[in-house]
Amino acid sequence: MCASPLLVEKLCKLNAQELDASLRARAQWQNSGVELGDSLEATLLQKLKDGLRFLESGFYTFEIRACSPGNPPGTIRLSLKVDRQIQGNGIAYYEWLQF
Image (cartoon, rainbow, N blue to C red; front, side, top):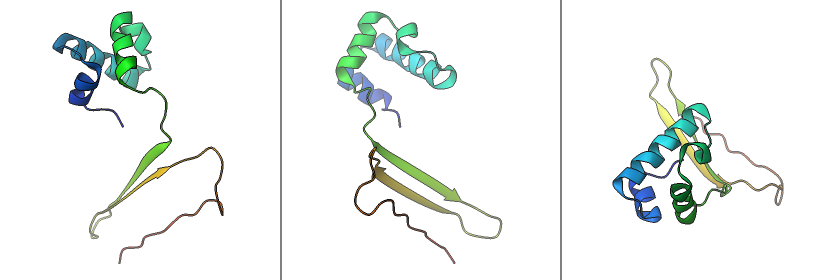
């Protein structure tokens, strides 16, 4: 999940031009895989690094949307921390059924 433009602006103390350039660079990274360092000036990239964390937190949100003709739609969201090693009794999952 990406930080909102307002959050990026506030955390990194960006002016309007810097915010615009960083959002364009983020879109290029998302759409084409262009590295931020290749599309941003070094000073702006450093401001982003100073204000944001670029390491994965290990927290993820999964969203499943179910829809089929004639049945009501449903959405399930699950947020969890994923560790590199299995903890406790292993991996557990839950199944929801809607009738």
